[in-house]
Length: 350
Image 1 (spheres, helix red, strand yellow):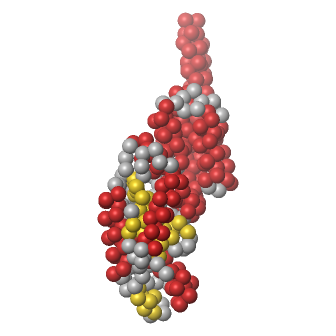
Image 2: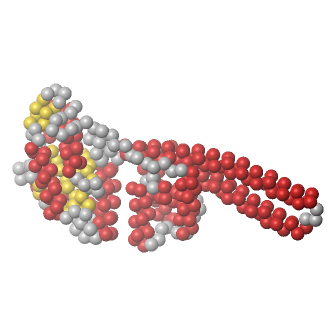
């Protein structure tokens, strides 16, 4: 089902992740261990997993944001906070994928520990040979010592080669599993019909932006939108046409907002827009432009050559006040939306 005047072909936007090479995996591992020591966190699998994901950057929305916020507030990071982040990670996406990823990360840890052990053993062997030099009195003894060193070196080189191969395989597995997690995560936060954020995406985005606004003392606005007389569209033309109208509005709003803004389907024909670092005047100006843009479009259902005319949308806008909680902000934006409805629809109230 498609509509004209605004391309309704729903295109999947791929998430591009840079692959992590063997050296990158080892570097992330070392940084993760240093991070645990720095914040005096226990060397447990859950803490290592959170630390590894933090430096890998595969889940910045939960891990990096939560850790940065905790450290930014009190310059501390407790074991309790790390456990909470770990739990959020495993609620976040497919548990079976996380199990595989955890296993691979622990495997990397063991591989690097083996490599460190081999290097340490070779270093000790060199020290022993060095101490034996003073006792060498014949050519045969010297040859025996050199032969031992060569054998030890060849063993270490062979073991290192095997470890590198295993590390490369684990690196590929981690990259593949990370991509799967990103795909699963995107689907969990996406409205299946409109391909914008769903209610869960809205809740999490609003919590994050609210915390950032309070922390950085910046402005933020919340917009609630509702398609006017949407039930009449469904009753007259059917739910398939109604779905096409929802997709139309989603794409139009999405095309008018900035990269750091968020749009989500709040429920039914209601949408929400989060505008970080935006004051009330700027928010109202943007939303009224969107309102006028919607009103100006004549909607035609392409497949059926069905002209359903123009639609209108009502908007309510609320600006976050210092110290205001999320529930109050949503309530204020909702009240303004219903004020717009009572005022004849097709307007912006703030």
